[in-house]
Image (tube, rainbow, N blue to C red):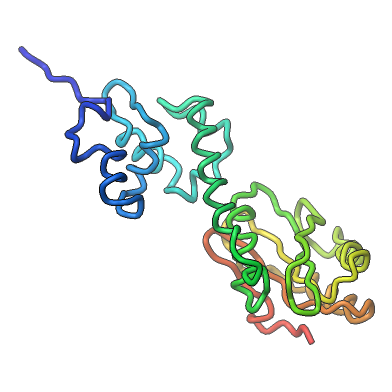
Length: 233
């Protein structure tokens, strides 16, 4: 009884179906996510070509966002991946993030909560524990720096509000935006989030540093406490 094995090399695919050839002919934007990922993987494993391995990988981690959030070591353990391919994937994801951030200077001016979230969403949505960062702004709302302040659960008993303003005072920043993430992926504010925010706003008034907003970063979304009605004036 003859048995035809499942192809596992891209070269075994019809030329019109090969991801690299399709990219050259139609452009990267016309490829599916598994096809783009398959170009990085280059080869598959017995029984699966690179596109099928890519599709399995995406399914295992819940899509490209889940793959981004996954620890390097966990990606390495997937069948057909290993450290070299995991490194290629992580590097490509980071290059995409840096390209997104490499915009003209005007893009680093904050006009809305979305502008602020765009600066940190990609990186902070992948963090496995809570981190609090402060965006330092000048008088024109240009971003001077993004400063990490706390790592760990954000609650009123642990956060020393004055720590959030050290860099702002040192750099003579006119305003700050506070940002922290929820590793659960749900950016819904907790009572502690709201209590800490009010304490930060009051401290900013005493130090003459405007607190423009407090953003909570979740998975593919964020919450602005200013838009939620917390008083920042």
